[in-house]
Amino acid sequence: MSRLWGRVAGLFRSKSFIGADMTGNKYFSRMEQIDGLGEYLKEKRWVVFRREEDPTSIPVEWICWLNGQRKRAPTPEEMAELDARRERVRLNVALLKKEEEEKKAKEGTGRKITSIGKAEGPELTSFVRHFPADSKGDKAEEASKEADQSRVKEHESEIVTAEPKTTEPSGSGSSFRPGTWQPPS
Picture 1 (cartoon, rainbow, N blue to C red):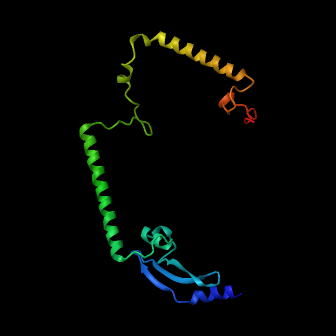
Picture 2: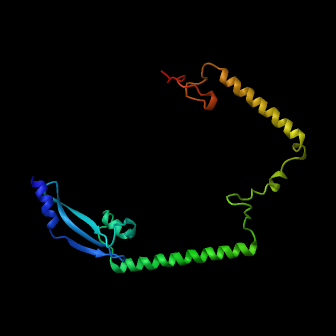
Picture 3: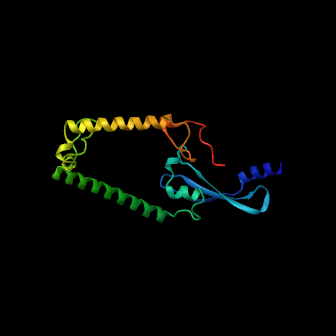
């Protein structure tokens, strides 16, 4: 009962006004006892919103203070300096984007979009030049088919084996058999 009475009385205790932000939100703090222990005090921090409760309207610096990541609340001078810095960054980003677009327009190196969501593929002509002339045409297709068939035969022989070759778990996909691996004893 005394804890309940302490909490009710705490609502009427003096709260100290810490500051306000640009949107009009007000920030307060109060020292409270921790679970009835008289010597241990904890600072409680909260915000009273100017309009409706919108957590996105709280600046980052005040969020850090509310969460206890800052010991001191941000000053109005600090907030003005940070706002000016954010505005400079926004202007620099806009300037860099504009310069980049102008550079692409002059060089004409921008990729052409043929349809929404699809871009041209990479240029492979320089890559293909590195292959010898005999790898083109029917011989390449035949070699590819032979390689595919040999891979299928190797894969089938792996599936047929009953015991794993090692004591470590192995296999994936169609060769995986749950419950076959046992740890070494």
